[in-house]
Image: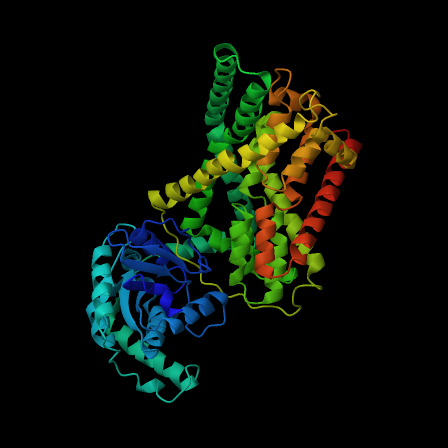
Length: 611
């Protein structure tokens, strides 16, 4: 284990309680884009990066830990690393608004004989709460360097690196009085009491608490966390986020649609007129390449703005409170509010959401959370929603798409309620989670994450989706001699086999069946394949969908897309996290079954009501 650092003269682990700004500092030091959130338990594995100004220094962002000897997955990762790298100098980030809690971890590090440099973060927030800290007293009492930092404003960054580098070259062990822990186990009651007494003496000397007239966090929480108003407010906030995302993006989507149509026409004329290219080459480039990929990319503005709004809700601290709002409901299905955080993360992508379930200590609760997560509507499904909602529900596009996300949550809760006796434990769990303070997000905390997620979306469109639409185009031309995308083609034959299964739920066209089959690889390909297979006869995708679907069948199709099989990446991560290949197969099976049943109910009920 220790040899892995031999190529880096200085390796600095970054440690701290959850949600103290470790990842923000890590990003400032390394230039990487580790996700920064405003809730505890966000980092679930260690991340590594090289210092921007000196490639000989490597920083490691360890998961947040309240205690070195904790039982959570994050704390075990941190403890195991420290046990195997005791020679490293540790950079501990402490939240100035909660000094006492951070110092407990400091003492545990010093007890292990580890060299510590303390970075005091969130000082502005502490001052707003009337907390004034004399860092020189802390340094004197603990005999360690203490540096005041602000990773967002980039202040104290160079000083902390210089301090850590100097500390790293020292061979001195901690020299403070740790007599309270001699000849005792780390979990001994006397040791714990001794730590707290020592911390009390430090806090008493170093912290001055001034009277603050108003505590805005408590004032806001009285409303947002109200037992009666909390859930309706949460639903309204999420609905508003979707409405804003899609209304604000509409002109940009129209502009992109026009631009891609113009590009397609220009390229087609150039190939036919100037190059006299064969028809199949023109079809491959224009119909498959440009048509398939552009049908996905035109929705980039929607996705970017939605990422912005979700980043805003997360960094302000509101999404963390959703876990408490949902705790009462989650207990009824054998879970706790902490399980709701991975479900919220699933709105972005199911893969990191499933990884985030590592923060759940109980293995049965964690398994149930993993099995629920694929019902959460990830951003890859958005192009389908935007396309069909824009055609059939243009006046209420945001509301319709919000309803799909809500259906996903409801189905997941119903599923968990039915499964709790099989999977989840029966006894009630006590849900303890620190509420982060409300924070005004900086520009970089909103735009940069949205930019990088959108960049990944574009990259995926230019690689995986392009490759798949070309495969679809190729199979739609086989066997040689058939018309492109004819029912007699290889794809037509395959799609025709499955199309009858989709008839009762409103969309029995073989091309829809094919798009859903390829959607198992990546959900974005559903729209890409429709753009490829429907690009015949000079008609637009919108006009063909309008002719082949009704508003009812379109909504049924969106519900099916929401709930059916998780993508390949999600299935793979489920297998990795559960260490059981049967689990992803079970998940795929029940997701398809639930999707068909839900769409059947939607479509047949709609027909019965004359919709």
